[in-house]
Length: 92
Image 1 (cartoon, one colour):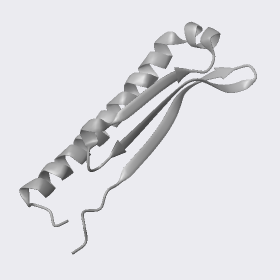
Image 2 (spheres, helix red, strand yellow):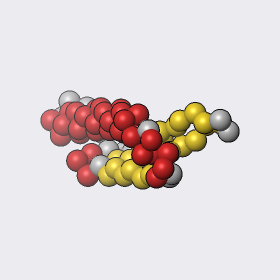
Image 3 (cartoon, one colour):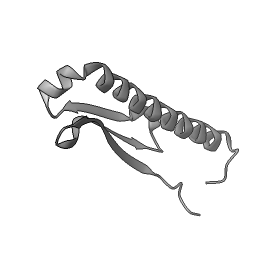
């Protein structure tokens, strides 16, 4: 019998602003989640340029909120799949 297959997903993104010199990633976001324990999802955020972040804080926060919504949607999918496996609805 094949043991249940686990998936670990790592995703990263960032808040990008336009500058006269081109695009600049002002802040970054990442997540790591494992299908066997989606409740243990880890997320992180960081600022690459404090001055640019400060000038664009509203947009950066909107981008981080969008990233976190995406992360929660992914987590919800994994939680539902895990519940289906536990109830015997899905063959492992």
